[in-house]
Amino acid sequence: MGKGVSIQCKKCGFSSTLFEGIGIRSKDFDIFRKNIAKEDNEFIDYILNKDSTNNIVYHNSYGRCNKCGNLATINYVEIQYDIEKKFILDQKCHKCEGRYDVITLEELLKSKCPTCNNEEFDSFVNIDWE
Ligand SMILES: [Zn+2]
Ligand SMILES: [Zn+2]
Image (tube, rainbow, N blue to C red):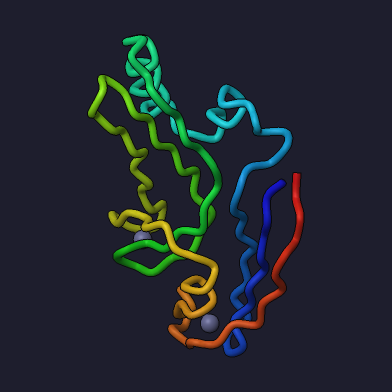
């Protein structure tokens, strides 16, 4: 079961709900992959077809863009293959050219509002989701 948090900026009213973990319905990697962009999935197929996969880690994570500070749920995917190689799915920001970094709940709650830069969110933690 995943966890979620809703945040709302105290100043401008920006709000967002983010999730982390893995839901019951997306427990299967094939289902989880449906949220991933086509070109990324093609590369994942390429790795999986090599038949040298050691380990696949995938879950939802809280993410923050390293350029514009946008906050979003990201699909974290890490695949170890060919003994020492590691693929980590790149998380491009849909608002700018930046990339999302994985952040903890604590870092999320301390983040600046992506809209007005204010530093205080109201938050409602621990939503269980499927
Ligand atoms: Zn704000
Ligand atoms: Zn961005």
